[in-house]
Length: 212
Image 1 (cartoon, rainbow, N blue to C red):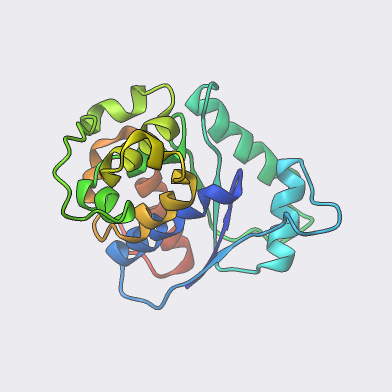
Image 2: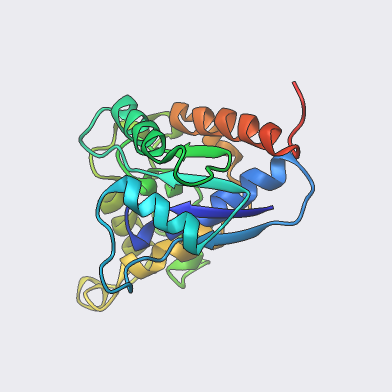
């Protein structure tokens, strides 16, 4: 199974471990992941439909994940934006089975639950600092989960304020995802549950999923 992930920005590559884990949960098959890196092109497209078209040309796949952060927009609006962009392309390019990946607020909300991974990403796996991770059912209500994750990584480092200024928590977000081996706690988040249902349906389209 070769999949392509189209994202809002480069930091959202951290979704790939979550997608790979979710695919493994739905079946036993080989997985090849691709992130659609378009930034280095001479004129990278800005519109979503154009980004999807070019991603499919450069990164052909059997399963397409399209990510948008809800941010300040209604969650349902982001979902519909993806549908509209894909509908623009129908008849122009073949569209593989599609899964929309739309965390409420930001992708980082899905990385706020593994304390061990956060500590390890901060190079302080045995730290004892109190991190006070948010309750799983509250992460979708956090206005800025990115800032919360950055703060947790800095706190987990155990460094003092002066040395923390030399940290780059943005670069460590990927490590949090890579060091997490079980994302099942996310099942309690409505946005993730919807994503997982859509993934199961898309896999049935490919012939790899469990038939209902």
